[in-house]
Length: 96
Image 1 (tube, rainbow, N blue to C red):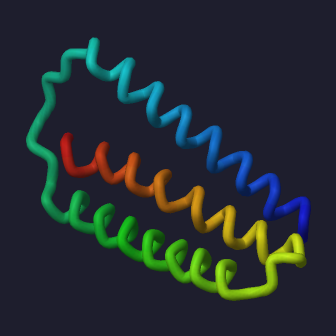
Image 2 (image 1 turned 135 degrees about the vertical axis):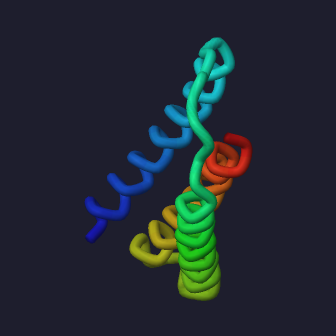
């Protein structure tokens, strides 16, 4: 369990860095495309809200439990890292 939660935290941190790097690189690109469907954007926003609420509950559950157990700290850390990761990916969905 410790290996799964700690590797999940590492993957989330790398994902945040990759998203921020993508924001910087996308500014140089030019896009000539068609209109995006509203249904796809709405479904992405709905799933992001679900992930956001799930990670918020993880933060609450990890914060209210005993802090001397490493499992509880890793649950708290994974939830706390997921929240900014979802917020940065929401920026891609809203501003495209």
